[in-house]
Structure formats: C-alpha cells, structure tokens
Amino acid sequence: MDYINKQSFKRASWIIRCLPFGSSFYEALKDTGLSSEMVFEDSSKYCVNPRSWFKSENSVEDAFRLLIKIGVLRREVDGQGLTSKIRLTPMGRKLLESRPKLFLEKVAVWEHLSFSLYRFWPF
Image: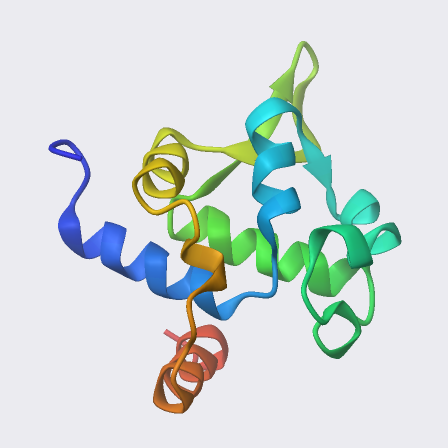
C-alpha cells in the first residue's frame, strides 16, 4: 500500500461499501472482465438488492464510472482499443486483498448521505 495514497484508499473503501456489488462481482473481476450489460442481466448474482439500484444498463455503467473515477476499476483493452468491459486496477486488487469482506461491512446513514452528495453534486 506504500504507493497508494491513503486518502484514495479510504475513499475507495467507503464507496465500495456504499455500492450494492457483492463478492461474486469482485471475484469475477479478478479473473475476467464484465460489461454493464452482463451485470444488469445477471444482477441477482452480482449485486445485493439490485433492483432498487439498477433500473437499466446505464445505471450500472454509472456505478462503473464512479469506481473508475476513484481508481478501483479500469476499462479492459483489446487490440482495437478500449472495450465495454471493466477489470480491477492494482489498487482495487490491493484493497480487496487487505479487506476481503469490505463490501459486507455496514454503512451508516450519514455515510449514505455523504455518498449521495459525492455522487450527484456537480464538481
């Protein structure tokens, strides 16, 4: 974790806890790439309480963009360039190795409110 900014690590931990993705989502990302279409179609496998979060593939893509923005995910690259699939970054791998049950930790109400502001407030 020496090369990862502690503030970035803390922010990523907080956001992962606030999003509905479960262990199968992060395990799948270690081995293969996932697209928003794949996650939306099989949301009961990859998410906890998915229907309250994801109304379409675009809402899944928004969650992906947030995780990309904070450095947990990256777009998969093939010979043609960027694809619609995502993978874990080195920081994402390190975070999940250091705290394997991170996504199961309880989130306080004030953390959810802060998360909503972080997500939707224009910066």
